[in-house]
Length: 398
Image (cartoon, rainbow, N blue to C red; front, side, top):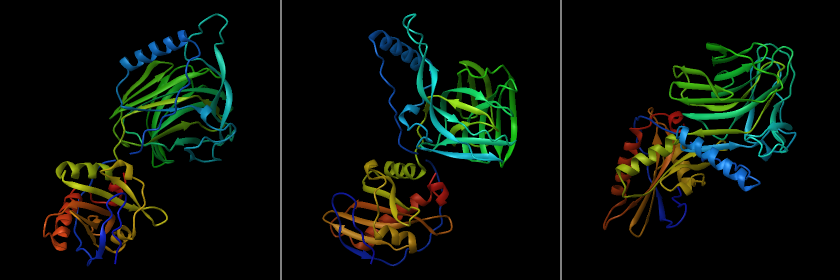
């Protein structure tokens, strides 16, 4: 008998395990993660604060509206270590990169207030320190906190040294180490280049000849809106590109090549938040049937435990499930519970082959004399509506 225990208030009494639901075929959609905020440091004097305010106001009036922002300040991470929330990746051959937070002299974002004010300050930056000269070696450090559709990323980079190569760049629309986009600057090649890596092969290159000074901080901006990609080097538009969407979404990160030692400064990412597919499904059903009291989708994690991955109450996301949800996913068991004025049903959400890919927990208002069979029939119709929008586990977990 499966447990129909409730998350939060109004637990249901007397759960009953029913027969396995008959398999149904289905269809899919949608997608992401909480916005992360790392707070910038305040100015030290009123005049500087006013200058910062005016500058930020100008940026706000001229920049595209993306809706959310992530600020990565490397001084928030332990020196001498790889920053948390990132992972190292390697395309090509050779040793992985050696990514650490170090201190370096970084120019201020604003002009000095007086002639005596310092134009550079010591600040924590990200460094790729490995000098493995292997050809076709591309160390990357990928940000794990978000997956991006449309976004604008702005960072600073400094090419420190390198014999075989002197490069630094931004990887984006990252799927894995064999599939991504990159914009990189080459001091030895005297160019800025965009290209894709698709299944381990570089394709669709676009190159702009330009001098890249070594030992100097540069600004690099990558902005993606659909198939339009704009790249800015030192605040000048360098590459307005229209690129077929080989990868429409993906992660972002930092990139080098071969033995290049390169530094990266604090980074800002403005982006349009993505709604996870499971949450978009819940939102869609709730719009169609606002009288539903509770609608949650549960999935198994890597340890075989169930957790809420989508809910009409955002505070419930991430909470653990019960035996009822586990049974629904394992063998299609339907569980029922009832309390005054409310019925609860847990059912499997099936993929196009009829196999359970998740569990759905529904709480519905009951009416006088409603039977268990009738309540399950109502819940089953809602499940059918959901299965008309989702067909595979992969689609559900996007």
